[in-house]
Amino acid sequence: MRSSNPVFSRRGFSRDNGYAGFNAQQPQAGGPAVGTSPYTQGAGNPYATNPYAPADTQAPARGNVMTIDDVVARTAMTLGTVFVTAALAWFLLPVDEANIGKSYGIAIGAALVAFVFAMIQAFKRKASPALILLYAAFEGVFLGVISSAVSTYVSAGAVPQAVLGTMSVFAGVLIAYKRRWIRVNRRFYGFVMAAAVGFLLLMVVNLLFSAIGGGDGLGFRSGGLGILFGVIGVILGACFLALDFKQVEDGITYGAPREESWLAAFGLTMTLVWIYLEFLRLISILQGD
View 1 (cartoon, rainbow, N blue to C red):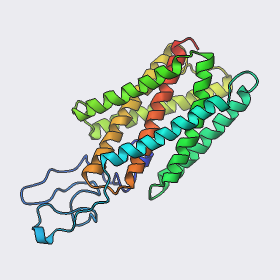
View 2: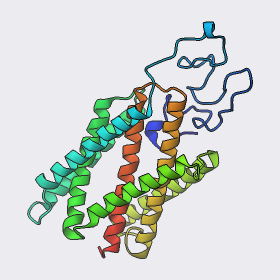
View 3: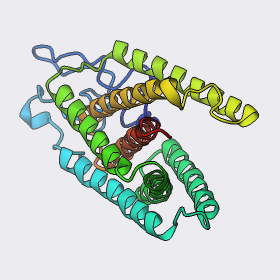
View 4: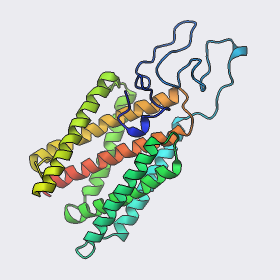
């Protein structure tokens, strides 16, 4: 089973035979822990030491391992890049009547470039900070233009509300996860993935009908149905955050290499962008767009 986030479906965070940490067994008396994570104890793990082995036979502890500080610092860098380029796009790419076509064209192009960078990074064997920051930069351009358009034509308060909503979801899911109100296991993973696949398929069908017949297609992005699917999108984003937190926790617990903190930051940024866009669309519908 793979992670819901493609950048986490890698050697460092998951294995083909199981989701990282889900099958991990607790240490038995007198023996090392055994599990599916590539960072758990065992002879096949080049990163681990055996805490139950005699002191004179243990391998030296590794210092180049991922920590929560690494994840926080890298996430701040990627989100900071998104914010800076979004602010620049907001001011340099106006969405007034004279420039709206050009600005939208640049935004769509930036989104496509960001998608390409994301896919390249997702299939690379190692984290590439340059690719991740480039993804963040182009994603920021797209978000800046879209946010400016919503602020101009829908509501001046829509963007702050979407940002506040995204921050609230992040904080809420983090608190719930740390207090174990959310238990990320195989059943949770399967439910989230099934819901996400169904949600994305419906959005694709709606887009096709919209392209063929015009308007909003089947109405999944406007009116009452639009509100319902906007709420579902935010809930799915919250579930993705819980999966991301689980992956980060496993990486830290089992001693993932420090470079994997870039992948953690990348995945969290992608999820937060998803939640922000869903909030922005939901607010647009509620404001009468």
